[in-house]
Length: 115
Image (tube, rainbow, N blue to C red; front, side, top):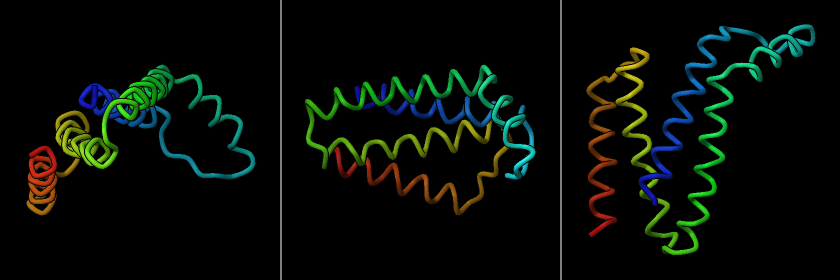
């Protein structure tokens, strides 16, 4: 269930990113609020990404009803790893040596937590 929660959250994040890429750059000014809000709220990627987050919350509540939070919560950090890797492949995000080192530390931490 924890992995399902992580995957739903990651999918939500990636879908939101794609939706906002399609909306484009904008500034928070009074005359842009309504047109931008309409573009964001009518984006299928943003809507499906939001749905993934909502489903992730439901799954997370199920996890919390069954597992120790001190065990379950740190495992959510796997989402950082998956998001960074998928961001590299889907959006061309940078995976610098320092980021790769950070990802390795997260993976190592997850291994320690699950032992």
